[in-house]
Length: 171
Image (cartoon, rainbow, N blue to C red; front, side):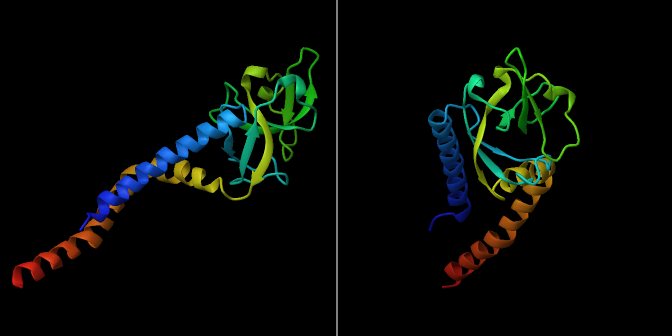
């Protein structure tokens, strides 16, 4: 009989490889380095909510218009920002603002082409909570997660193994 723990590890590894392959395939098909992104704040309510997942398409900056929703990186922020274009500057750079924000933030007044990951083309409600849950709850508590996984393994698999050994030994 196969070890259920090793089977689970194999399935997890295969799942990670499959997710990476799908992400790379989408990146190629949609011409972007970041084909999917989780919305991590409520700055775009009511258009998007924290936990929604967006699918992005890479579009040249010249084709972006006021009203388009883009995802961009900023040196001041650790995570990509999802905001609406409100101004196209004379030099071709962009300005954005979150729909729910009362005013623009300083880093939104001059966004260059190199900062833009893509334009939002599809919203999948709630699916982004998977990433947010992992990044905000699992990873910061990885020690506890490992301890719980080991304890669960001990509680589930070891008694079965002992019972199997008893029945084999006795009979």
